[in-house]
Amino acid sequence: MPALDQARRLLAEYPVVDGHNDLPWALREQVGYDLDQRDIATDQSAHLHTDIPRLRAGGVGAQFWSVYVRADLAGDAAVSACLEQVDAVRLLLARYPETLRAAHTADDMEAARAEGRVASLMGAEGGHSINNSLGTLRALYRLGVRYMTLTHNNTIDWADSATDEPRHDGLSPFGEEVVGEMNRLGMLVDLSHVAPATMRDALRVSEAPVIFSHSSSRAVCDHPRNVPDDVLAALPANGGVAMATFVSGFVLPEAVEWDRGARAYVSGLGLNPLSSAEETRAAYRAFEEEHPRPRATVATVADHLDHMRDVAGVDHIGIGGDFDGTTFLPDGLASVADYPNLLAELLRRGWSAADLAKLTWHNAVRALRDAEAVARELSARRPPSLATIERLDGAARATAPENAARAGA
Image (cartoon, rainbow, N blue to C red):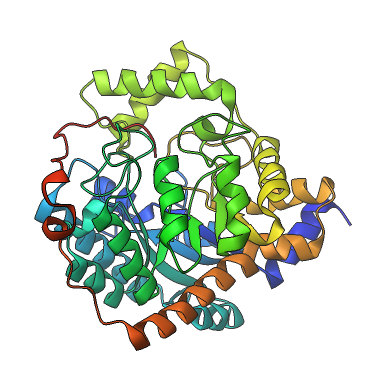
């Protein structure tokens, strides 16, 4: 049987749990969440990487929808924007109930798979979304948010980012308290975007599995957004899962400098390089016409997964494509329809069906289930934390720069 047909058959039984999709923010930027203008029940390939026909074609069984907030939004503005993103996911769930099913637990994910629907979970991208408030963190959990990425592209008051100047050598004392409270709730700690020191601190502190919702291997492509080998090697002891991303500038070494140049060009035009608006996309196309882009392929991503499996083990890897959160993707991985191409490449490299089922489905579901078990134990003996950043970090607390650099999706 051809590898592509075999991949599709496998995905019919063990579909993809994708760790990160920025469709809600793309809908915000492009149409102000007006789903009549971006009806994802129909082909949206002219505007988006994601729609329901392509989710079906790609064998997606569960999606962590990112309730991302731009790093330059701060304080209550960041909290409000995050709540609006949560509302956008709820709008999607209400409009497409035949396809999308709200999921808050691992059991919900399995139930959605049995029904043939896409389990829809939420992940908050960036700890600035809680405005240094553990009460806000708990409120997001009650609204259905099941992971939080500790930082986005900027270092925040309690955690260092991979793409900004460090101020805490990882996590501050309040940052450690945030991780502990996430463990008590059952919210996964997401270490994509954070500095290696923050990764190591979180692994030291966390009593539950951590995830990397959309990060690849730094040994294969030396980009600060990727995961160093010593951190990958620590995942088995923690039970965590590193979910490889598809962003060309993070997976192909030749594309790293090109990507920096493209972002600088777009920023120089006064545009946000992370925007999915048509004006920004046109600017990137203009840059690409003058500066041909090094092109990643399906094999490029497979190289990352081969290495991540070798270092972390097959029980600790997954997939987090970052669709609708980036402009440039590998050839053969242009949308959510293309996951079968990746599995076919891995089959050709000798990956077994059992290992691919772990990659696509089992590992992510198990990590959430284990986090839920830890939360039951911790919440039985530990009340909600009333700690504040002022009390724990005191005079050591720094004020975040107003215009820190934004360096990656």
